[in-house]
Image 1 (tube, rainbow, N blue to C red):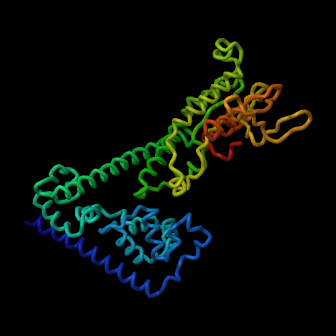
Image 2: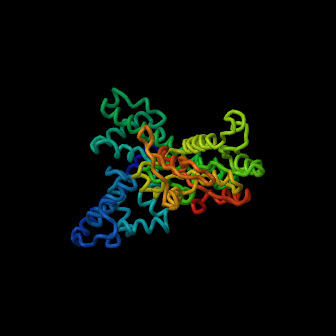
Image 3: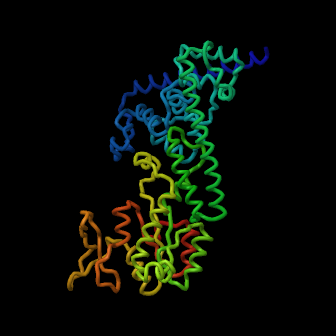
Length: 430
């Protein structure tokens, strides 16, 4: 008996809060309609309506659309529904998009409260989001008879939601909503595991370690899969590393006497398994009869392609823009300075747009674009010490493999180690 009284009191309190939020919301709507629609956010006048569609309407409509489009708030009843979110925003004196974003920067917990992210999902709020209002109370009574008193209990005993206690339509809606909720909850568990792994590798191995980068990329992918819910953890530093750093590394050139030390730095020290080798290794000298240049070109292409595949799938353009991830992921081609053979290897990874091609006595900017027998355009030029046109490797990888590869040039192996310690920053790349 005491338990039933307590449950009824809790439900009555929930209903009181919802009615109060609705009253606040309606009062604010009436006040704003009296003030007119001349209060549009002037600070956003330089942003096009195509980029941010919520700017095309009045301030209140802007905020409502912004909450739905950017934060995944749904126009449903309950504490996480759009009306309740708008009511909390107005009580917090957040009346436009700019005010909300400024509050989010300085007091993120407050914006979580506005969005209802700190609200525990209850049976009532779950049903309000999915069933017709007229069915809420009767469905709650049926749950009570089945000893299902909270949402966690419903997740555990989902199998009892069936005929004859519930209609086929109600059963279908509830089970479908529960399946979606469990899927989201499973994604969040994976997300939290990845976050812990990222933090561990970031602290213990550094930002440029292969496992740190891999977990960082997986976090980006998971975050964009969960765009309907805002993460409840601070992801700013994850995004910071991702925006400013490369996502893969291949050691494409190194003097032979420095290779053992460089391999230790790259492979054992930082977890990258992508070391191409030297001109005189067994593959080049025995199997390919000293045609080391062709062999190196093939290994470069394979290594860059394989490293790029290891990284998480990048978000679609609209989601990339939403999270500020418009940049294309970059794979680094690392070169340690050496002799003539290293110069030839380095030429193949210089920015093709900065190279010149000599035709007679004249140096023309850029590489030559030559169409092969298959009708495909290849960018070609003359490497140092060469007198024959060669396909430029970086240009080929960018044009035909669609991988953004850039060169990092190191004077010593110590510089290579520093590059990893700093997280493979894009500012080092050429």
